Image (cartoon, rainbow, N blue to C red; front, side, top):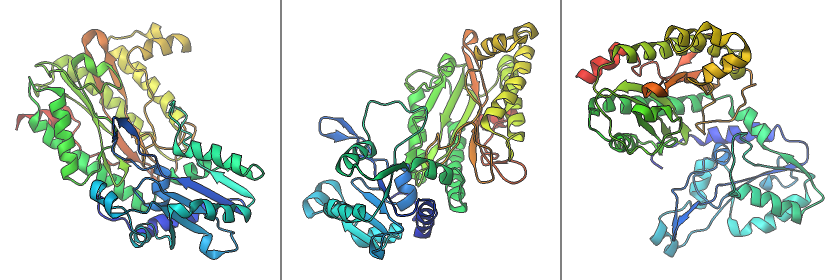
Length: 429
């Protein structure tokens, strides 16, 4: 791994907290991710299932975790199965975990090769009444590809139809949404790498540069600072491209006079940072660009002040929408009459600002948690208001990562330049 080792006590504590929430006489079975097929005989770079990593720290495919806290055999209450390597496999694909290494990483004492899984599962299932299985229940997920977890759910329910089956996801969501001290430090490291990269980019950008050159610079700086890579596909959107919310072509020229929206974040030890900054390609804001930019910045500062315990994303969105309406009027993009009722207000506002202001961040850049979840200390969320003016070929978004505490919100990206004079000064150096 590129990142520094994480103490296995972190994963041990996560498993203990999870197992304590299971029903009596239960077994939970959590799978690693598949290797994702690309084309020919190639696979995409492996990325571990976030729940599996959270419970084990194991970054390897073909692995399974069984947790059965009430099993009468104490050696089977926590079992990890990993694929056995051999000399030929390691010659072609590199080193895989030994049992001793997997114990050291995970803190799990009982580890078997994967070939033993079916027979061991049969014994544990015979001693269990309730079965907790895991699926990705993220509400916006839509895919035709069956996950390893889904295939396993179908198989085990067919092989053991008389058990009581339950969802592991709600337990893991409630647990993962509150970040421990270890997780907060890992996310801070992701933010630090992202900050260092942004500061380097400010010196790199000039009229005529291609969006993909900036994307390459980001990837270079992330990797050289021990990040796994990017937490998501970097958005490098100049001019009118900034009005495409998930623009990832990154193949256009950055022209003199354009604004450049960059949405990128490092992933360190599988934990994400999520930053957006919008800057002038030539290093100097025009009056109109500055006017729109500072409107977005005011909205962001107001939103951060509201990110305190007891609030929710849903409530935050409503407050931000109200603030945004005032700014859109000041920018002469809307009139007071446009906001005379809820239906017209939504239509007018969504022409220039069509998404929510926040999402949870953690092992996934869009991490577990719903917009109805009450903010509690230890949660980390984005704050990303924006204004998109297609007719002016101008899109501005500013995004920081915010830690909820007992008192005021803590901005984990407060040191990343976002004021107009800061950006212009750094770009002039």
